[in-house]
Length: 192
Image (cartoon, rainbow, N blue to C red; front, top):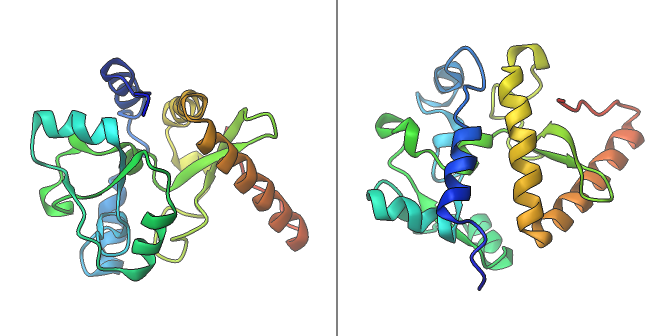
């Protein structure tokens, strides 16, 4: 398999995504509603995926990230259906979080890209799953750091250009999202 994420590229992505998303700690914001644990740190429900290169890069530096022992049947099914360039991982959780070691997925949650039919990232949208659990989903753009939004759009464009199958996946997902919003008569909120 061709290495797409070089150490230099990973360092760039981590720099881009190191900008604070909000002025407040979103984990503290949602943890009280989830028995004191931020929803996105709940390994049983949200299993982080790291690119193989990202996982190896982290493992060379520390043992913070480990391969996940998957118990959740839905997650196991997702593993079987996923691309071969992911490692499903486990982190020690919010109590032991080392912010500098957060994965790409941790740094981008709860957003994903909205992509046009040519694969150009138009902006960020809230992920389709987890909306009932993540306290950020549905909040207005003004709570987000504009630099974070701009850096995330840059990150997503560069990542999708490296991984054509991911680009196709997001083109398809973006089209479906637009259709769902149109059927409901709602305007799609895109963070630009």
